[in-house]
Length: 162
Image (cartoon, rainbow, N blue to C red):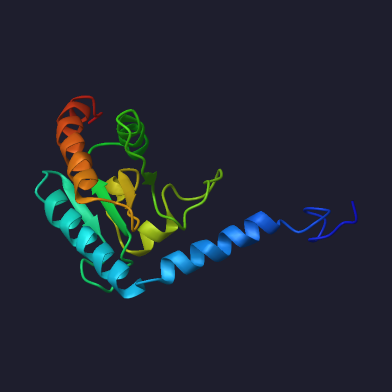
């Protein structure tokens, strides 16, 4: 190859990838404001309902000041990785920590710098998950996630080290 694209990919440009990106951009920007309003509606619904579950707390703004497609939630007394894998076993895929976190190295503080900067309590740094929504997310999917959380949290709390 000729070393195109800064030695990352030699040869012809990725035409299917470029065309696919163009179609994705067209799709997301068609009826954009309606999609954003719908995402905020789903987000607000999720925040209201998850707040009914004991031991949960939503991190960040609850209004339209926050991102319309992401909700950060802490689960007191439950390690995020344990809950993440338990949810994964039930077909629910979430992320732990914050989107801005990176792998911690020896000597660094435990937990996401972003979560520390929003002054999250120390005991919640390793108990936080990020729920993301898309224009394809349904209220039924959110209800399923909430139902599964309602089942899992009491069980996982039994195995929490005090």
